[in-house]
Image (cartoon, rainbow, N blue to C red):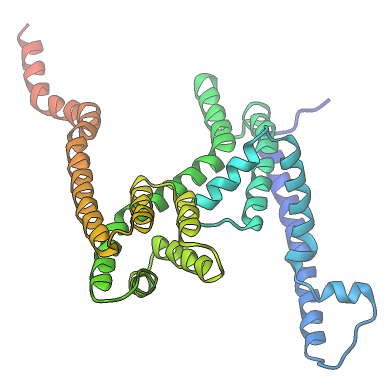
Amino acid sequence: MTNIDPQLAVALFGGAIGLILWTIVSQAHDKSVIRDSLRQLDDYEIENVRDQELLNPIAERAFLPILGALTSVGRRFTPIGYVEGVKHKFVLSGRPSSEAIDRFLAIRVVTVVIVPVSLYFYYGLNPLGFQGKSQMGVAALSVLVLLLGPDAKLNKRVDERQKLIQRGLPDIIDLLVISVEAGLGFEQALDRTVNSVPGPLSDEFLRMLGEVRAGSTRAEAMRALDARIEVAEIRSFVLAILQADTFGVSIGRVLRSQAAEMRVKRRQLAQERAQKAPVKMLIPMVFCIFPALFTIVLGPAALRIMENF
């Protein structure tokens, strides 16, 4: 039995993939021309079921069934509570649509399936020529990226959105104070403010206002707002507004105290990050800057000492 060259096997595999993709794209182009021609006929009635399906884009006819199958596999074999956790994270990231959740679960299934393929690529074919510890390290890194990459990206998106909300809350509260003290009600002031300051927090406030106009109470809408964001400053703001409604305290006074508190917290957060900067700079200085500096400064002296002795 003859051994096949790994590079030749990779080239043949890539050529087969390219030929399949070229065939699919060429057929899709021909069918798209047919669909465009049929759409131009306003009064044309299609009786054939296959022709009706051809009017749909290729994403609905080819990729959506595959996506549905992968999503069902992901929902069946994931641990208990994982799907609910993914849904909650998508709510926190600002994309609570079911299509986005299905795509994420399908990607998780694909990444898990690719894990043994990647191990075979590095240990079976090994076209890159890694050996020993380097081969093990690259394979382990690939497996970690495939298994933890989608969740890490989703967590990063949630963290970035929460930071944007935390950063934009003091400015919105300042505008709310001005609008309320000018004579507007809380909902009217909030509507005017969010239209002036775009961002994720303004989108959540607009959703809250829509829930209030749809029939929900202010307390229910604000608690739902807190559950969709999960930021400590938002929770403090929501509790202050709810207590003001319960005990009849002036909204303007509560908002002014909240604005002062948020400015203090933002200044403290900036000071905290500034104090962490020297500690974070220590690692690159020790491992990157100091060795080069010591080599330049002490290198000639070390060579001179070696020549003398």
